[in-house]
Image 1: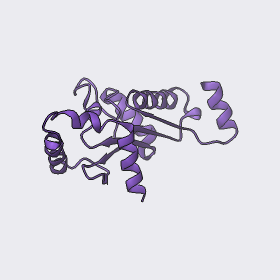
Image 2: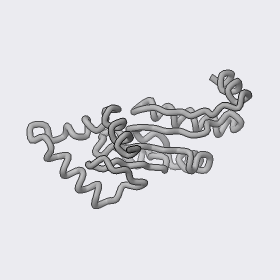
Image 3: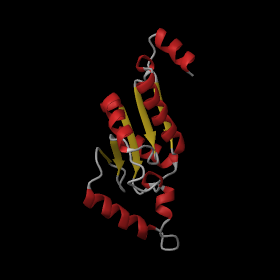
Amino acid sequence: MRDTLAELRADGRAVYFTGHSLGGALAMLAGARLYLEEPHLAADGVHTYGQPRTCDRLLAVAFHKGFGGRMYRFVNNNDVVPQLPPEPACTHVRSLRYFDAEGRLHESMPLLSALGDRAEGLTADPFAPASDGVRDHAMRACLAALEQNLA
C-alpha cells in the first residue's frame, strides 16, 4: 500500500480514505497510521459512514491534530454501530456530521434533536422497536441522506 501511495503522491494525485461501518474504522486507522508514521503519504482526507468507535482519547487527539477539517464522520440518525463499543473504553474522532430523522445534515448532534430522533425511531415500527438503529446503518440510507443534502 505504501508503494502505491508513494506513486500516487509522486504524480500529484489526491488520496482519500473512505469506508462504511468496519471499513470506516479501518479507513480512519489507516489514515491515522500514515499521518503518524509517514506524514508525506498522509491522505488528503478521511470520510467514514456509520463507523464504530475506533480509538482511545490520545489517538483521537492526535488524529484531529493531523486531519482537523479533512475528516468527515457521517452518522445517520439512530444508526446503532457508531454507539459501539461503549465509552469510555473507545471513543470517536471529532468531525461528526449527523443526519437527523428528516435527513437534514448537522455539524453536531444537538441533544434535544437527537433525543427526539431516538423517540421517533423507537416508535417507527411497533413490531420491531429497535430496528430503526439497524435500518439507519444501511449504506443506502446514508447515500439517500447525502443525495438529499446535495439537492
